[in-house]
Length: 313
Image (cartoon, rainbow, N blue to C red):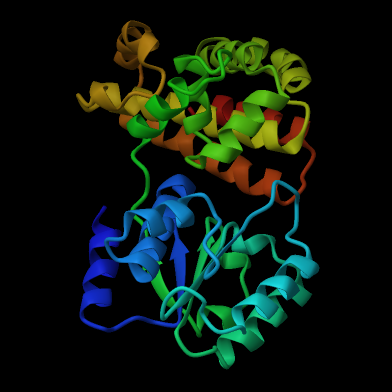
């Protein structure tokens, strides 16, 4: 991990910051890096100490995360109280807050006061996949560590190899069009039947190219499966990926395909499609995505794609 190497170098050069903000879409890698960095600061090469940190039972280490929508103010108050105490086993205290964007405004303000006047030898590691939701004043008091985007192929493999038997490679590929956040993807797969939605999406894309009147009729059926905003955004992302795939085939980049099992079908379709036509369709999908995020009626959004594609060429 390049990020961990940089942090390790800063530690050995005695250039530790009092607060770090880890930003990226790969929450798992950021969390692993944060834990290893905490082990370095607290333990150096002490295996027993590192084991305590890994199991969250080191007296100078605090780790906060929640599966709920927000991190409770009480959790932050307890953290601040604990971190204001002197270290017990070593020279430093370290705390990690996972999904920092989940803090309430009160919680963020409590942390902000803590960051403005940090206790000596205390290091904060804040992890976020949505840094735009964090107060600017928090950003300004942290050293930013930017994590490279997770490669789609790696993400698909990680999902497909999960313990969830319903997470097949085709479903993982579908989810990769929408997110590269592991937790977001697994939650969607747990909450919804994605295989029928995937089938409807691919069928609708084919109709958009070859039978627009049928695609118009098919919007109702498509939205029966994409029944809420998250699934509708996933659907648009998958539709966009379908047409990106066609561009990849046309430019000889078949190794980048999302829906790899469609390669032979794509090869036949692109013979009648120009670059300009494909780019135009992708532009309409991008515009539809903007409208959907602005709470425009989803039926109108999808119908508008068909009307514009049909009328544009």
